[in-house]
Amino acid sequence: MEVSKLPSLRRGWTTGACATAAVRAALTQLWGGLQLDQVQITLPKGEQPIFQIAHRDSRDGWVEIGITKDAGDDPDVTHGALIIARVSRSDSGIYFHAGEGVGTITKAGLPIAVGEAAINPVPRQMMMAQVEELANLYAQSPDLDITIIIPGGAAVALKTWNPRLGIVGGLSVLGTTGIVRPFSCAAWIASIHRGIDVACAERTEHVAGCTGATSERAVQALHALPDTAMLDMGDFAGGLMKYLGRHPVPRLTVGGGIGKMTKLAQGKRDLHSGRSQVDFQHLADVMGQPNLATANTALEAYTLVGPDLAQWVVQKSLLNCQSILKTDEIAVDCVVIDRAGLILART
Image (tube, rainbow, N blue to C red; front, side):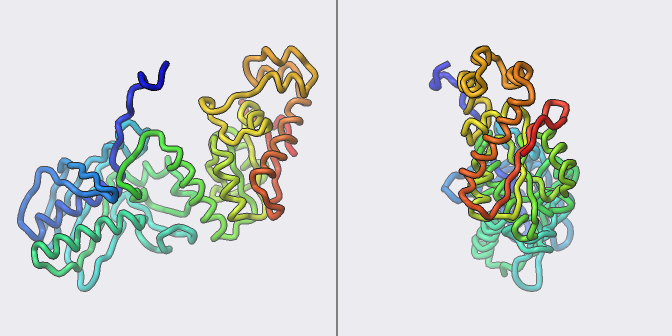
C-alpha cells in the first residue's frame, strides 16, 4: 500500500493537558462564578484544543472539574479516564497534591522530588500559567491547593511502568507538548530513559532489558532481579543501550526470544517486525546450511539447526550490545529463550 493511501491516525491530548483544562474551568467558576460547558487552553506549541466538561462539584472554598481523556488513536491505558482537578485557596503559594488515583514519588532519579505528587514539570508549569492568568483577570491572589484526581487510576497504574519507577498509588500526570501522537516510539524510549535514571539514582548493580513479557520473566528468575531492575526495552534495544552507555550501571542482561535476538545478533537496533527483519540468507551462510535461506521464521531455523544457532545468536548479540554501549564499564550478558520461557542459550 502506498503511504499516501494509509489512513491518518487521530491524535489525542495528554493527561497533563486535560488536568490543565480542568484547572482553568475550575478557577473560572471559583473566582469568576462562571460554570463552563467547555474550556479552551493554549498548549506549549500554540495549539488551542477545546475540552468538554464531564464532571462538576463544589463546596465552600473549592471547585472540582473533570474532563474525560481522549488519547486519539494511541493505545494509551488512560484513554477514557476522568481527569479531575480540585482547586481551593491556600495560605501562600501553589501546591500540588495527589488525589485518588494519582501516584506519589518514592524513588530518586525522576524529575519530581521524592514525596511529591507524580505530576511532571511541564503539566505543573501549564497549570501554574493558568493560575497566573486567571488571578490577574479576576484580581485574585494566586495562592492555591491543586489536587489532581483520577478515579480508578491506582488499578490502571499497575499496567504502566510506574510501580517499577517507584511511583506508588496511582498514575502520573504526564506530557511535554499536551499532545498524544499515536504509537509514539519517543514516548516508549523516554520511559526507558526514566527507568535507567531511577536505576542510576538507586545505585542498582544489575539491570535487564527484555523484548517481551516471557523473556522478562525468564531473565528475572534467572538472576533473581527485583522489579525495579527490569527495564522495559521491548523492541528498542538501541534506545536502551545508547542511553545506558552514557549513564552506565555495572551489569546489563539483554534477553529475548529467538526471533528478535537473531535480529540483534545481525546488528539490528530496532527489533520491531515492521522495521527490521531476520536475514535468512545470512543465517544460511554463517551456519553453513543452505536450507536456512528459505526458512520462514528464526524459530523454524532453530528447529533445523538446534542449539548451535542459539549459541551463535547470543554470542553475536553480545558483540552488538557492546558496540552500541561503547563502554567497558558495563558487563553484558545475553539470554535467548523459547516461547515457553525456557532458556535456549546464554553467554
